View 1 (cartoon, rainbow, N blue to C red):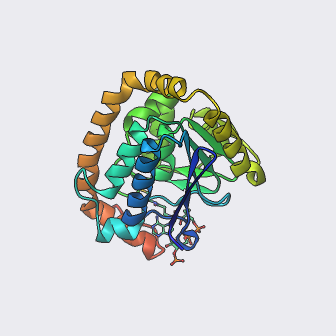
View 2: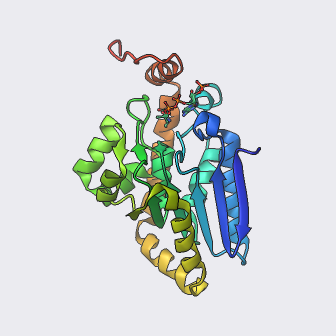
Length: 254
Ligand code: COA
């Protein structure tokens, strides 16, 4: 089975993360498939809305840490960058349904979505600093804007998991819905959006996003440079090796 499943029906494109054995950790190939799906949805006049989801017990464990070690992303044409470009500039509305772990990009991608539905079992986490990395996807700009500096500082510096309630209080989550209703609820919202006048909807999104578009692009470029540099740092190697060796990382020597 492909690790990314895409389908389009009733004017909604669904993008499903489908790598359960690795908690939907995202590889370069998966970013490429999602970037391609977003591009196809944007250019297909039949598509009005995109819905991103996993299973109700797992959204995604974030970037595949083995890929980070073995095949770190290079430059602005890398699959991850294409995906980030796609979600940050999408003209059509993006809806996300989140249950279980939503780690790293599993949380930062939500900052670009228009509607985010989360189940009570959702566990968000931004573990960039504990991994020896820096925030990405424009989150160093968007999260302080959304949540306020102090709340963002706690989430981005300590990098601990947080609940759906906390994510809602931070402004990341639109609504918390029961786990067994999660996808159906998100689909209903997507259907409601798909039934609206499409040009008006897209213009409304563009008007809301326009004032910060260039700042987001600049933040993503600045983060990307530092992120790529940190990926080859001794701090990041220690953090990621420790994850696979199932031990606590030791940063005392740095
Ligand atoms: N990259 C690569 N593999 C990953 C992964 C990731 N980001 N997250 C999980 N996996 C793999 C595990 O290595 C494990 O593989 P194995 O069965 O071959 O040992 C499998 O997925 C299941 O993960 P496990 O940790 O046993 O599941 P869990 O339910 O106990 O915990 C998480 C789930 C998401 C909390 C935990 O896996 C985790 O913290 N993952 C790393 C998240 C991360 O740091 N992401 C990068 C953000 S930038």
